[in-house]
Image (tube, rainbow, N blue to C red; front, side, top):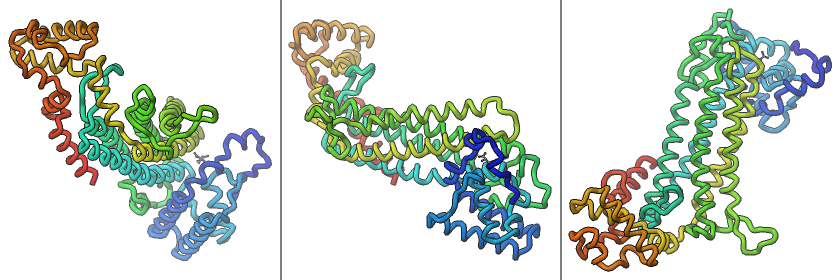
Length: 457
Ligand code: ARG
């Protein structure tokens, strides 16, 4: 193969453009790409069936070499495409040089990378599935235990909810992430192979055949776009970034909740680390790193957006930057998913601590219940809100909870208040009352859980 010699190049050029160190990860895709391409060349009678067969045999041999760790990845052949093609010629002779008929590395690399994205969504979705199942299991367990906690706005205690309801909120985020990955595949599924360097092929190729063999939905419609487009990388990076947002929000709750200040969860030694000096410590390092690594994935998205911005058509070597961004993002997400799966598994939720937070002397998590009670009995909600706010302030100075105030104090606001107000102010009543769709009432949560379990069966 007429490859320019690496010796003649400035070492700085070699250092910047040789990509075999990271793009060897595309070897499976590249071999499959070549198999589909050469099959199509045979079908179209562009190559003889003997040539096709010997090229396929050579590709099989290369697959064995790579699988066994015997394949010589060499810098002098720059990238995975040239490394494989060079080896093919070494193995089967000059006929190996016919493989690249009607193909360019420009359509080849775009095809390999799309294929890699298509295939990598499998493990991604598998881990998401496992994470969601972990959350659903925890939700069922905590629903049966009747675990309640305050939900927070502004990180201030707001109102009582079921822990199962809270866990199902995370499930909803991950459900959307799952669908986002799936949606992105719709556009990844267009095959660039056949675009050549960018103008299309001068041979009577059939891009439908190679696209179909590789599992794409259809060929790309425009050869220039086929080699230049990387918005499928952007979409995947964006979906990965959004997923990292959600993973980091879950991670953050493990971190906050396992602090002494909250004490809502205990993480087992399996997912925490000790301190080298403070013997009492149980640090949530895994969750912290999952939170921290979000920045790195967002950075890759930003980097790729910047690389693509204002890049003229069609192929430019800048595009080679797509791979490290994508590979590292995918690896990071897969790792963080595993960490959070383990955290969910190793979490024991502290029912009593959560209950104490709901009922705390200083929290007034049932203030809305009192306002609703008054509004239910005819007082305009705004007036009820103002009166209860005042009452909370008074109770706070007296160091009393709302339900510790004597009935007369309520009746001073409105004579309609009866003894049953105390029942209305209980945690159970507050939760049971939120029975409208979406709400935290036990029967709504049970329905939501069963519906989610069915969806994720
Ligand atoms: N390694 C290159 C990349 O990743 C392959 C395509 C090179 N094409 C070219 N005309 N130099 O983008």
